[in-house]
Length: 210
Length: 210
DNA sequence: ACGCTTATTGGCGGCTTGTCAACAGCGTGA
DNA sequence: TCACGCTGTTGACAAGCCGCCAATAAGCGT
Image 1 (tube, each protein chain N blue to C red):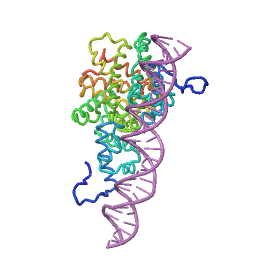
Image 2 (cartoon, rainbow over the protein chains, first blue to last red; image 1 turned 45 degrees about the vertical axis):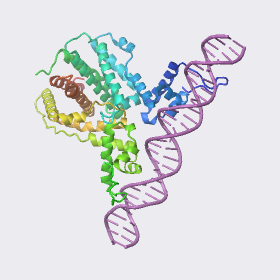
Image 3 (cartoon, rainbow over the protein chains, first blue to last red; image 1 turned 180 degrees about the vertical axis):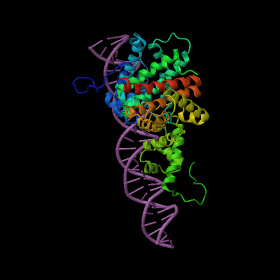
């Protein structure tokens, strides 16, 4: 990951396309912020690992915080192709598939995920909150797509609201697994699948009626 | 909140009991961290607002981070709704009853409840997440009592873990209802009941059916 | 009134981040 | 081929932050 300065003839600096350099720094930031939390990752280290001058980070992202926010954005917004890949099979298959993918993603970004699911709304960063709230809404919509429930008209808004809540619980559950170790990955998978299934089912046939 | 240095005769420094000074700083920290997020509140400001030397903060709390965590602890362990034992009838009846009771309680303590669940639940600090999770543990134990499930031995820890997660979702759901208005009270009741039922069921089924 | 315990201070050292003028790849036109 | 210029890139600078610690003095016990 560090820039090549050892081989003899290379120019001391290499000039990259802005997008390319940006992506390179971003990739490095994704890795470091994934391993450690915000404060303990310095821009100095970020620059060194990227093989770049520290000032360049500010040039591209303005601020360490903005770089961080950009990393979060990349992490929480699910790319389109992933959705398409899951949008077939029975409802249960699609539920299972999307849960599995979800677990894979957060497993790969362990530290960063743990950093994102905390604090219960106190002393929180509004910028981060905005991104995550937007991402939750986005996730809820994609869930509707993935589960093939975009057609339903009755109770659609309610289902979206429930899915937002489901997301909250999903975060909590992964915390029990990765932070406290009180649940296994398999148990997490189970509870997420069955809960999601029961939420979807209730839209069609409520069981605890008045 | 700032210390009195203007009135003539007061000694330039005042000597307080450790507990008293600690509480004073803590109160100030509670306010500042409540207004802004962690990084944008400096110990310098914290000290100035407390009318105290900056070093004193480190003396009492060791670290800015530890002070922050202490503030979170204070906030989070306040909520304490008395939950009565409702352990009779079928499991579903007990579930429904406890949920109804839960909704009544938070309806009666609307303002306090909204203050507690705050504006969402996003953040980025694993340590804080740990503290909050610990606070939810009490609630989970009360639930076990209320549902009359204290007797079971197998999968007890897993059930407690799941109830903690359920708890966070309950917060989120009530937020959708009372804060955002995207769900009705009846829908909240439904989703809480069915989700809780499916969680409990998942614990029981492996025991009986296998 | 005096001394002693200890709460409190203030400044030092090291580290952090954002800015900015200067530097130098590298494509371009002659 | 070579000089030129655009702009990606650098390195140093200033301000600020945090943890530490020796020095200071508040106020109680005697």
